[in-house]
Amino acid sequence: MAKVAKPIPEGFRAVTPLLVCRGAEKAIEFYKNAFGAEIQNVSKDDGQNVTHAQLKIGDSMVMLTEEFPGYGCLSPQSLNGSPVTLHIYTTDADGAFAKAVAAGAQVTMPLMDAFWGDRYGQVTDPFGHHWSIATHKQELTEEEKHAAAQKAFAEMAKKKSAS
Image 1 (tube, rainbow, N blue to C red):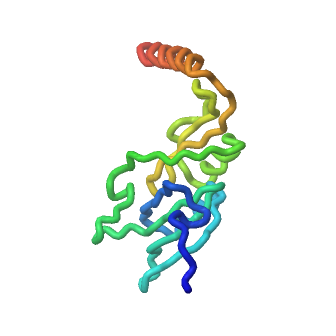
Image 2 (image 1 turned 90 degrees about the horizontal axis):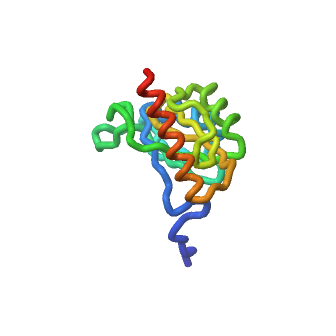
């Protein structure tokens, strides 16, 4: 008798990103170097294109596939960007950020102590995917976050009007 399958496979969460990458093999290597991804499995077609890969980053799975334009499976490079940012919480945002940049990610928002209590920054990987990297440093009440946000936005407005 066949074993009953779990509705959500072992190691997965209810939501799992699937990244479409032009150059999936290189993307897998980048994610290993930049984010410490562990390869769970990789499937390829007869032409040796990655049709499906599962990577584990921290405690989360990320799926990945090669771009297949004939099937409408397009990467951010074909779409001129991506509206999605993948967020990584880590115990060392500074170290993780530096590792991603050293592996080839471009800084899109330098690391900062964000008003909501995180050490936070953003990068874009060589395949067009956006990543935010953070360490939660401070527990704030909603009122404290609101006051800090107002102060941060006022400072940004001053800088913008001065330039």
